[in-house]
Image 1 (spheres, rainbow, N blue to C red):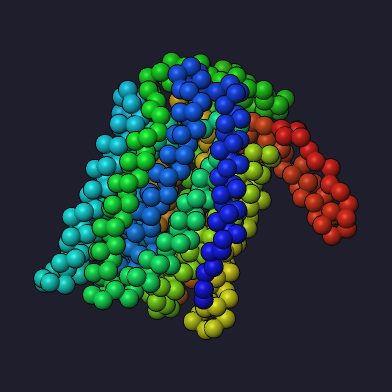
Image 2: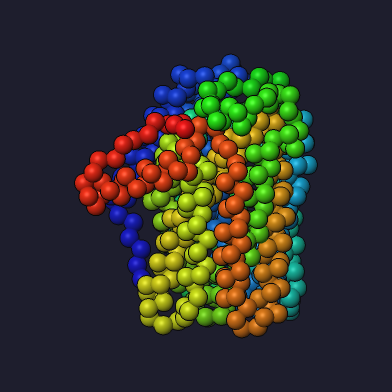
Length: 499
């Protein structure tokens, strides 16, 4: 199987970058949050968004090496159990419990930039001792279990520190990115990350698999490369315009023009209702996010394990499949971003969520035959990457839309903590069920996960999003578009925010 990265693909991405930067430049003439409009020049915001994108590109390279399929393959090479693989997936999510504490500390500093550089700098440097230990692993008598424990310990320490900075980082971007272009910008930004993964993952898989000293030492060498990429990411982050959290806490809420239904749903001043429990729609979002995180992580951490361990497929193939998924994400994210800006995030989460929910069922019956290797596994990763891109993007945008601006950091931290706990529980329960059920345990998880994902969508029916199309209108638009494609009947376009 071969991946093709054509000149046309690169040129198209360049057009998207230019279009997104130009759109951000146009939006700067419109009112922004008080602290940005008053203190940050337009050119500084544009350069910050460029720096943020490059930061994410190098951070994606760092994450691809120190996590995902390469780290899973490393533990499989060390004969890690299914429960330990579940711990590998659950540790980053458990660490999110500390996000509220990180938000508390970050909001009491005077610089988002320096807080992020300190937290993430230490976090990424903590991988260095593990990389050195892996390189000398074959030269001493260290047992496999000792190395597995050391890896999980390093993973815990780095993600605990990383969790302390996540809410502050998202609040920083929420200030710098214009509200009306969040879908487009984050769609473009995530597309750049997907392009990085599309190129990096297959190459890294091949390099590790064919490393002269073996795949274990090869992973240690490329972990050093990942650490360097992580430090370059922080250098790009240092070029972003700084934001003082103290100024944000005293800034007034931005005025908007919600529709009639949205106004009724969000009646009352957000400045007065500072308690999360007085925002029922945010509570509905948390219920959806928690159940969804549990259902998704019940089986998602074990797709790669299923390929590497149960089917004994080489890591170079698995990274190639993951690269196809990243390519699908690259192609679809900008489209999803523009669609989210037009019709809202809630309708996309509902309609696309049904598709994502049934994907685990499509893994049933796969094997190592030619049809699975050359057709079915690539198709599943393309489908998962394209459809899953909308979920990640719209969940992020939806919480930005419904969380009170003055308390962004705290609300983001609570969301991450709940998602982390539920996701970690899903991964741990999935690992335990897969190990206790024997050889068919992982495939049984696929069925259970699919059902839980469908259940998770129910709270979205009661959640209201400002300036979002009702689901019925969106379905009508889709039907009209289908009539146009197949019957030639021109669709009637609905204005943004139409109720």
